[in-house]
Length: 100
Image (cartoon, rainbow, N blue to C red; front, side, top):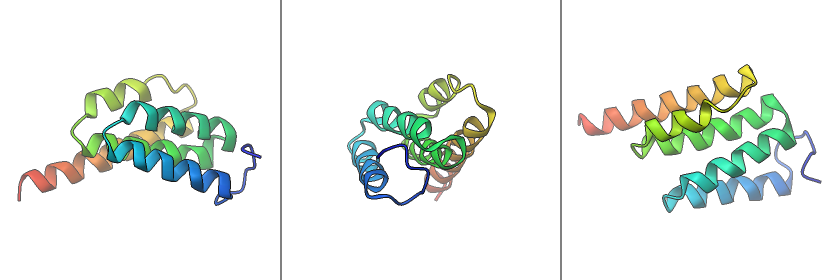
């Protein structure tokens, strides 16, 4: 069942792999949609880490503005802060790679 709170269930692992695959192909919109669904299924704490992962990948690809747009729609402060942390990580990693 997708609303199982425990992290690492087969369903949640599959959804994480799907998120990563969509992000790897540049489909950040679908990756973010899956992350938002996982946050609803898993709750703000564990689900927030899915949002963080999606935001990190998108920001690292140079789409920080688009990332911040969907993060702005997250009302709960806990998952929003985790997503913002991911965006910051991705933007920072991108900046480090561009300056090398």
